[in-house]
Amino acid sequence: MSFMSIPLVSLATFGGMWLMGQRLSPENIFSTLSFFTMVRAPLTVAMPGFIEKLSEARVSARRIDQFMQLDVLMNKCEKVKNENEEHVIIMENASFSWKDTPSLFSLNLKIRNGNLIGVKGSIGAGKSTL
Figure (spheres, rainbow, N blue to C red):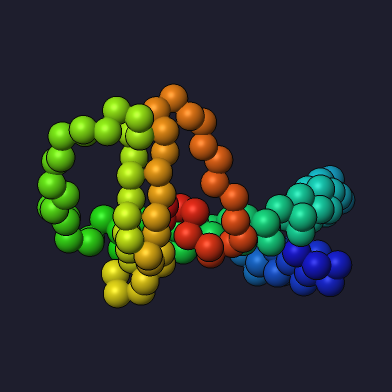
């Protein structure tokens, strides 16, 4: 409700009361105008944020729905007995993609047993894919 909406809302309210034959007493007019003034500030502050959050929630719900509609992929990985006790993860010339878009390719990686590994990189570099 902007600054000009209080007179318009008041006109509509009091005009409607008058048309319905209601008595317009100073007490009713004052309390109604006070109510409109008190409600104006929270609505002008909260309403844009509420609309923004509602829009964000709608986008998130659409993304979740798209994810839930994806086909389930079966695990095509072969289980191999680990003959190398020194390394727990070994990737040689590995490639990964999201749908048809390659994300990581020709990746060579060896992670030793018991090591703590950190992954660092810019946005979109493939950290989450890894």
